[in-house]
Amino acid sequence: MKDENVVWHQHQVNKAARAEKKRQKPCVLWFTGLSGSGKSTIAGALESALHARGQHTYLLDGDNVRHGLCGDLGFSYEDRIENIRRVGETAKLMCDAGLIVLTAFISPFTKERDSVRALLNDDEFVEVHVATSLAVCESRDPKGLYKKARAGEIANFTGISSDYQAPSDPEIALHTDEQSIEQSVEQLTNYLIEHGYINV
Image 1 (tube, rainbow, N blue to C red):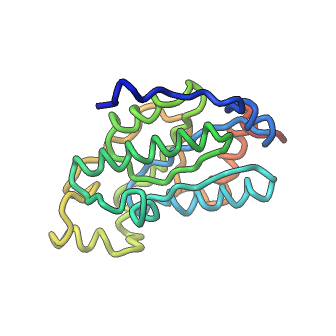
Image 2 (image 1 turned 120 degrees about the horizontal axis):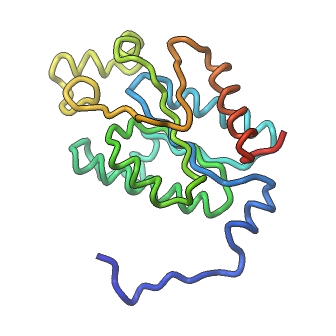
Image 3 (image 1 turned 180 degrees about the horizontal axis):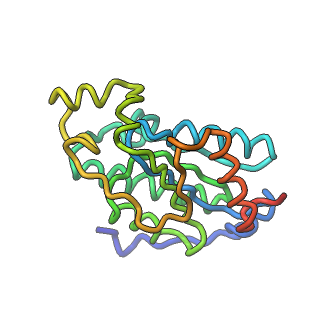
């Protein structure tokens, strides 16, 4: 529960001023999909492309945040919810800093993704569903996690012993079993241009 004596302090330099200085419209690109779908790979490739264009970005990766920000969390249902809550609050602050934030998290539950959307303005949350089938993700299995999950060595593994609730109406859907990384990056970049987040 938030203490009633904790009051938000509005500083003189605000989100609009920071965004204007960076010549971009801040947003959070929320990549969601099964393990092995290509979330981190595509998010990283997009960040590289945006950086080359002179945009100001930051990539929050699911594995990386568990080394620090969420290092005390496991993979229970409750811990997964808290993991996304912390990342959502962090992404909100980075968006306030005027950045284009990319996040790569399985984030399997609709309710938790919607809770992050609710933290931001209407046009600041861009849900990106990396819609790769379970069969393709399992055939890739870059970390050997599916094999361990099938053997019962990993509990609550999304897609195997835990549910993945796919987005019903994402802003962007990427089909990595049909398109290349370059095509996915092009699709994402075109969306950002068309919706005024970055300039041509």
